[in-house]
Length: 166
Figure 1 (cartoon, rainbow, N blue to C red):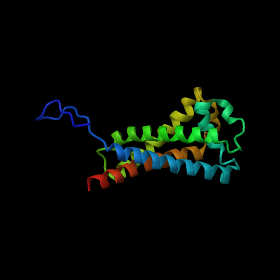
Figure 2 (spheres, helix red, strand yellow):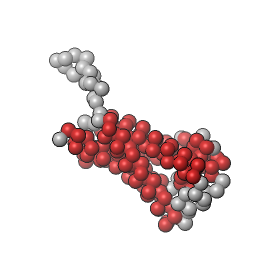
Figure 3 (cartoon, rainbow, N blue to C red):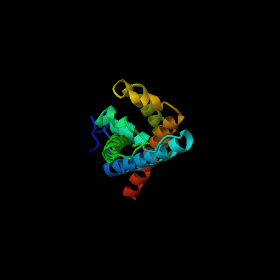
Figure 4 (cartoon, rainbow, N blue to C red):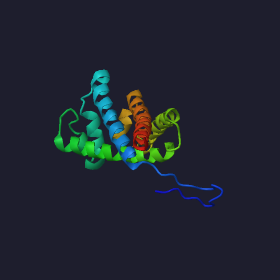
């Protein structure tokens, strides 16, 4: 996407390009780190099965029945969860890339963390209308993983963007 100026001599409105491969890469990296944190912290700190968070995500496309046996590694459920989670992570990272495109790394990372918290609020207080099982995970671990993921998306995006332009 190219810069679009309404008036060539005076910038009134413009759409700034993002580095699409950096945004996709940031989405995948942030999404994977989020997943590792969830499947590590939940068992260590709450005694949950490491598969439980993935069953919750898989149930988005497979329905609530995917939650029936959250302690079991179910290839269909886990595969669906990984696909859904990574697709959403990439989409959300692309949106964030547009937001942070013109910011410095530190500011972008902070904005990304706030974006992650906002995403937590949407996921756990709005989308629970359609996916009520996420209400059970309204806790500090979910807040932490979303904030880390958002900050990481922005940081990795800026690093990959910088590398591409160097």
